[in-house]
Amino acid sequence: MAREGRKIAMLTCYDASFAAVLDRAGVDALLVGDSLGMVIGGHPSTLPVTLDEMAYHTRCVAAGARSPLVIADMSFGSYQASPEQAYRNAARLMAAGAKMVKLEGGAWLAPTVEFLVARGIPVCGHLGLQPQSVHRYGGYKAQGTSEAGANTLREEARVLAAAGIGMLVLEMVPATLAAEVTSELAPPTVGIGAGPRCGGQVLVLYDMLGIYPGKPARFVRNFMTGSGDIEAAVAGYVKAVKDGTFPGPEHCI
Ligand code: KIV
Image 1 (spheres, rainbow, N blue to C red):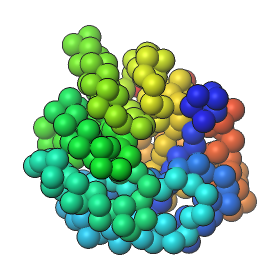
Image 2: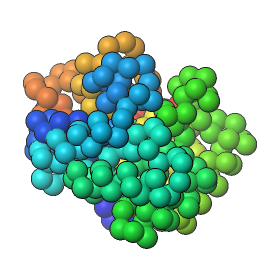
Image 3: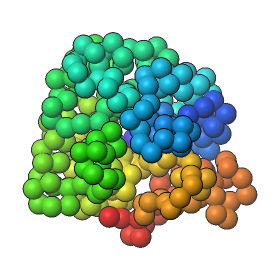
């Protein structure tokens, strides 16, 4: 899709019923995000999520989805210690039905990415705001906003691409920086709060349906507004991603 210049429409998904709806609505990729700890578990962060929970929800989503690519997040503490630890735990998510796993982190993760890819596990990187590192940032803050931060992010993206990632999520980074990284990198980028010039977009399902309590982040649009049902809202999201009308300037950092 990236090579053909077609935008990738991705949403998070945590169960079989929603997976079937998202499949019918034309979503290209379903991310079993560790955001499930917040939107399903009610935790203030993704840190309490376990690998068992990720495997369970991955199995549920894979059971409901026929066409979309199923990507599973590796939970906090399940991959950071060593490539061998990451392989053991990624293999569990692949056995549960994932076709790709996602890891948060920069250049320090390159040996792990190489290790997994060499053993047949496609890997999605995740740069910019990395929610598992929320306590290092001191909050959910935009990244790559200073010149030094932008240079680091560009370099980390190059290193991860060279290590073999098949896709890269960019979260809460300036739209211009995301556009530069996207044009330079072979693997497609998928943005969340990263502007319109990424290879695709992802949102947390419960955010775009307007059912997560609290004030939505600036980059979120509620697609239920004006839609008759959930499938129509999701189809509206897919259309807006594909025709480039989402995200608009009001959703950019
Ligand atoms: O866990 C998640 O939902 C994610 C997205 C925010 C990209 O990682």
